[in-house]
Image (cartoon, rainbow, N blue to C red; front, side):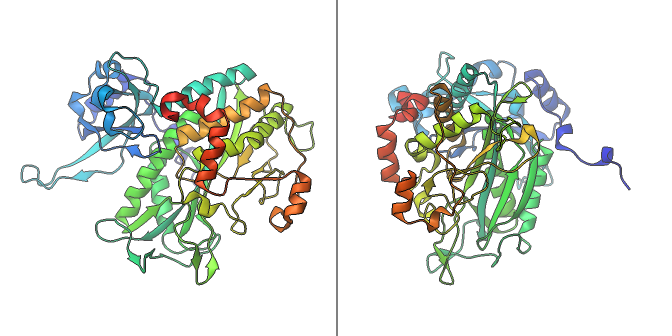
Length: 448
């Protein structure tokens, strides 16, 4: 039997440490012909069709960046101030395990690979651009030091649908609805599980880890769960996974959809939507400051204050966590999506739960309302900002709600002080405008 040392482990995948490391890889691997730069617009669309020839990536580029028109990127710049630069971040570099095949007469049999790197966005003078969503998250993470934390960990549970696609990779519609690939069910599914597996294999080859993958409750619905990472690396990983999954899905002639609620019913029965549950914790060096084994629920005082901050301010950050009109078709009773603002360690009808664990480092909060259309950089930032406000203000969480909240009457919920999430994007935007967290976190440029 093969020993443990023979198993593949993403932890052993080389991580690039700086510009010299990246340039050496390009020198040693001539098959890498292009470098693809990734960054996000305001609403979380990855800007990925931006490549430079590998020979053009030189040491000065890591300092000076590569110019582009920021006025053409949603949420970045006005036309009169649109010049921006993308500065590659060498520590984010990964090499695609697949090869592209050329169809040119000049290179009839030649394939090539690409290197992918995320980029910071700067102004022409080299200063950080306030409209860069990475900058927003980085600034918010630094504020965690005020409460004694140095790392904000995130572990998303990312749900998605796989639909039948045409030869161009677009979803096939019948009577206005996407064509399902299976009838499915929780832990049940057909051969499309291979799409999940192949996407994971690609990500593993790039050094990313997962804990589980499985078919979800709805037909053609799937889920993968990331091993936790610090928030910035996880935001990058979330964006990269969407890109990789769509590539793999297209290869299998299916379409990967992260739409929260692509269909309302199936054979007359309600269909669950896709969420992006976000597990989160704060650490100081190797210590989980959310954990206290001497309390009944293993939560420290800081964790409960953070939890109270999320519950208190969740309505005003919901427009960032659930940013589309379609998001609110998912947030309805009866389809396992949270609607009511309450918490309990095990109750999945609540907004926040505390996943069971006997490991101190694994103690965490799970916020269940976000969906995959959220911009991960901004979603992680506003969540952290709400939690930090709870810690700084020494908030006290409400009592736990172990009962099924969906089965309570409105009068019972009112008596228990259980609020409701915004039911439309308009309501969410109103709540955002009445609060202060999103404006303070995003800054006036992105907020406006």
